[in-house]
Length: 197
Image 1 (cartoon, rainbow, N blue to C red):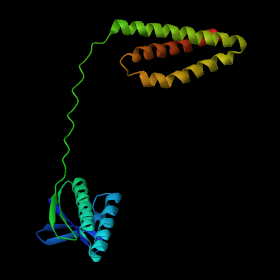
Image 2: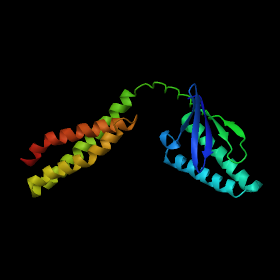
Image 3: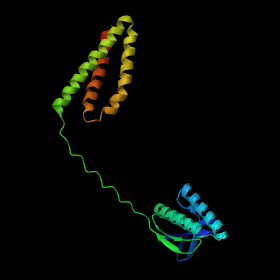
Image 4: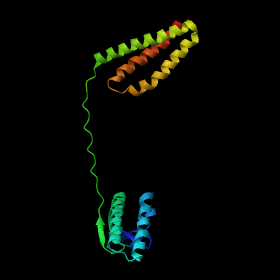
């Protein structure tokens, strides 16, 4: 489809495409224009027909023409083709081209940063130690009252931390903390039988 005409036929908007076989009239409903644009086209055609029957003054005719040009621009943008707008009151033709929006340039690739192994592993070790001490101490304290409370505390702490660990595991700095806490939780579960018995 290289170009089409937007016309008002009675109180209906139509799009006309010319090819070797002659003119082919298409209802806007049959094109991928969307419900809102299709309804706006038919509403414009109804208003144009009503204004045409009432023998309008210059003000009403210019409003209909301006609205028709706006809708032709939206049709051109939606279909990606030029649209010839045929004014239903004056019969003048205006060509509306689709606006080609420039594509965003691709983001430049992020430079590869060196992995801070020493600092990262230090943070991992600190968060591991803190997690193990905290979870095992909580389990040991609750095991003195009732041993199943120690298991329940490990379940609650693990279930509470896992979503956060999942979210931060890919963050450049926080991933080291996530590694330490995850390993700490695993070691706390290993230590749990020794705390209970």
